[in-house]
Image (cartoon, rainbow, N blue to C red; front, side, top):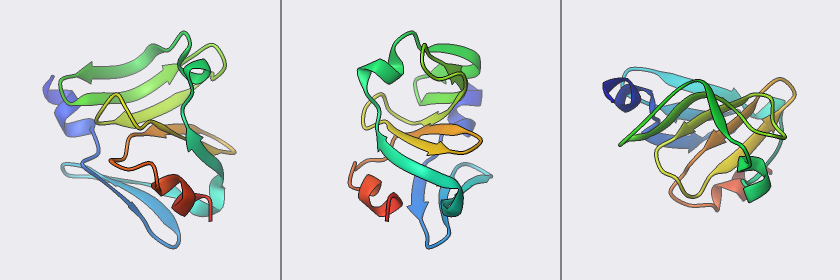
Length: 108
């Protein structure tokens, strides 16, 4: 449970060049130039979702997951709603911002 607390992003900022996931002691950057698209996660995306190397707990989800249609999903979610799939050429990320309007900002 403690590991989850330190893995989950507390703030998501979209800059001109990156999407930055801030956490306790580290930040993870997803370069905007690598992003193919961002969209809301559907039930189909979550179908058969299972942990490959991840932690879940009171504070959220963090780690590598897989589903029936996605081989690897890097999930950094503090809640079980507002999940956004960010597709890049190499990796697919799921984050959970407070507001889904961030999708439009990412896709600009």
